[in-house]
Image (cartoon, rainbow, N blue to C red):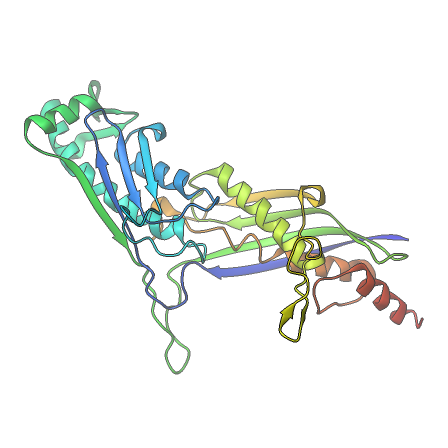
Length: 328
């Protein structure tokens, strides 16, 4: 018999290393043609950090995204960025890039105000142009501004660093382990086959507070990928160890979820502005994983009325529990 159930999983997660300093830094240089180079120690491992750092830099300088060249994770030339872990890089390296771009922007705004004959507070940098906020027709191109810097012997260089306002916990376990937190709720719908014990995840609705979503497509992809990882944690992935040796050290016997196993996932991006994050951003890497497994297990409980406390929830375990409940 096929039985459906729904379950909810909620989480909160601290962004960055727990109660420890975990700074990052960055350098920005704007060139004569209006392009910019960002040097950041942040390691791009497929999570999209190069894209996000380029967007933050471009937004701060008032140039388009395609004008930013990112050099990241190169120990020969880039400054310290810290580990790509703890869902921290958008928040911490993003802030470092933001502050570096702000410093590089100072000379640009100063020279642009002279050329536009207005106060520095009236200069707007946007879409590779500089213009007077009170007279949008009074504008010049970025290369023209950079030529003005060159004529004055000035450069547009910036350095930035950021370390979250966190502290270690004291003897009474009080302190500030994280400067900002992410929040999420997943709702899962499953179908349980009571004859075979097989659990099928039909759909998951995943709502995540990410602060400001710097790149909506990246955030949705993180949510979908993390949710699928949670699916694997709940139903298929198990490291089998005997006498200190891993018995299934390859993907023939350690079963990860694939695209074919992907349920329908509906990501919901909740943008609750973070005061410390770059343009209000937090992190979303690990938060996308955490609520999926409890949501699935709660849905199984809703379907068959049995609680499970050991993962992965294999068909054999489900069938045995159903049999025990029925006295078989």
